[in-house]
Amino acid sequence: MLLFLDTADISEIRERAGAGLVDGVTTNPSLIAKSGADIMERIAEICDAVEGPVSAEVVATGHEGMLEEGRRLRAIADNVVVKLPLTQAGLKTCAVFAREGIPTNVTLCFSLNQALLAAKAGASFISPFVGRIEDAGGDGIGLLERIREVYDTHGFTTQILAASLRSPAHVEAAALAGCDAATLPAKVFDQLAAHPLTETGLAAFLSDWKKTGKSGLL
Image (cartoon, rainbow, N blue to C red; front, side):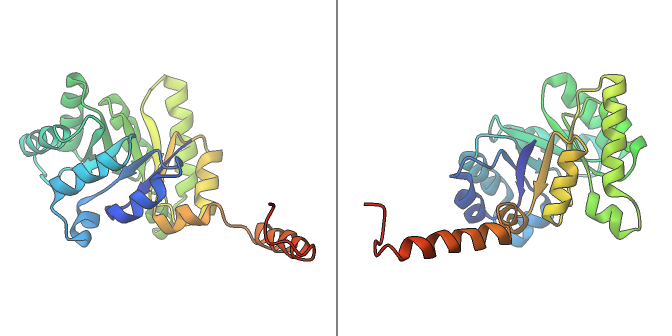
């Protein structure tokens, strides 16, 4: 499963991309607005920092505006994926971009029917919002599982990108549900490597080594 960072903070991205564990980045207008950066400049910086897909979202709500903004975003770099909202205009735009060979990430997915329409429109990625579904009392992980079943049954190639993930447990569940990718904040990404037994085990190893009177292996 691919792991994407969900952020527009270029320092967060550069710090973690160097380990080779970050497969891509997802952004949205809210994240970029919080960063205070120019959207086009920040997307270019992110694309330079990672080799994988970088989702850059349009802010237009109409079809023609989405087409114009999406093409401008795609012109920034070859790894830009145009992010579109799951609306009628977004799906129409997605279908045009699919014919043009422009990769897309259809976002704000909250139902199986929406995911079905996105796949039929030729979306490269579909982004179901697990955390927000759970906030509304729904079953976010269950939705991922149902999308996986339908896509596999009908041969859709759209990749499932689990979004709105708020904990390592969410990431684990998304992987078990068969998602192709997951996007998560830097804080949650860092938590994936943490486990109390790892920490206590390392402390014991170091304590035993210290008793030898050596400060290192050499």
